[in-house]
Length: 115
Length: 114
Image (tube, rainbow over all chains, first blue to last red; front, side, top):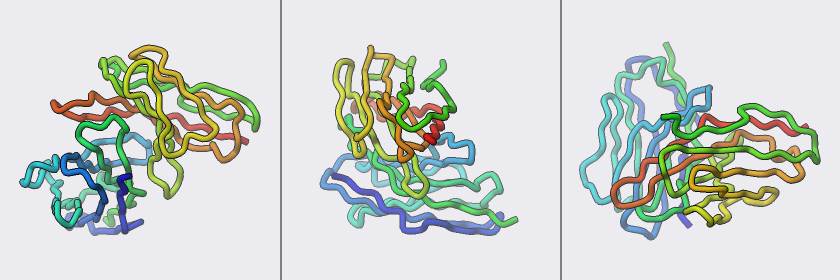
């Protein structure tokens, strides 16, 4: 079974600074997806960024980018120019490309933005 | 499009009562899922349905039953609620295949068992 580990229960960053959230995973598969989800206090699950394992290029979405290290099974999220609206829980998640058994989530990182 | 719709959004139950959480999606997705979210635990898979007519256990299935009524609807039933089932429940759906794996979540159902 796949596992996803987020080793930082909580992170704090000053507004406008850059922060990196860590995620490692374990799988025997070679073809899969990795995701970062943002969950504000409303509990809505918002997709931040998605990485396909067969793509070597790191995914980028505006201020959000990832550092995908397939051999090391590492998938970190970098948030540049942090904004107050970025404050939320962030979850890393894994999914086999062809499997139907859903996403496996990490336990989350609570991101605090200091004004 | 409504996406994934869950009802009810909030519910308080007494220990031993039963209830059903309803989920419907209008995106013609084959696979549907029920997750629960507890503090410090992330989202954990309760049950899933890879296609109409099939259901499978996830990581934490004890105390729950599910029904895939048709392609649109996937319900989660608590037969005899326990305080340990106090949680936020999420339904999700996905179109599985090599063309993409976009997962859509409902807004969550907040359940308290007293």
